[in-house]
Image 1 (cartoon, helix red, strand yellow):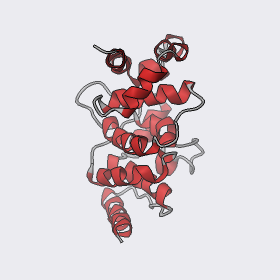
Image 2 (cartoon, one colour):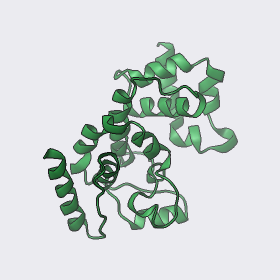
Image 3 (cartoon, helix red, strand yellow):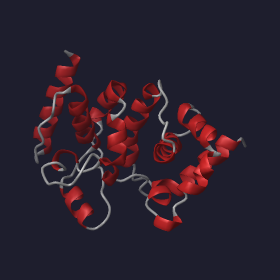
Image 4 (tube, rainbow, N blue to C red):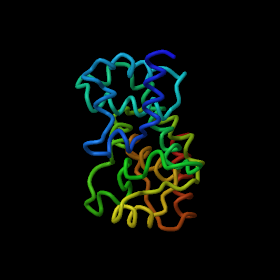
Length: 201
């Protein structure tokens, strides 16, 4: 097994929680290894031979520890990767790999004074137009996104966000065509259809 392959396995074994939400027990520092693993982490991000979760986690370590990341030209890779991560967030076939918390509270975040678009959402938006085609592909995904914690989970899960709602939110920000949010899923779907039509036009 190559150095990058071993590191990719360690990333997925630790998961987002083990890397970034475990306080003093965080594994991110040891996997960065004072920069010794920079090249291997970048190899993981750039190669579609690794799973999306490992690539995303490698990217997040680089964002955290490498002030020169991302290098010029990587947006074309990062845009689709971060857009597809919305689907990972909705994967409940096993333990939750990513939570809605990493994307912020979307439509209600600014209104409720709950901060930015989360770590992942912020990095997705930094890819600019590179994320748009992959986000459009997520507009049919009706799976739920779940939040964790106490107050965060209560509020976030009460909004019943779906992958398609999050994709529309980020598309609205990236394209300058914000999408109105409704409590009624049918009304949300109508807004998403309008957004899709506007992007197709």
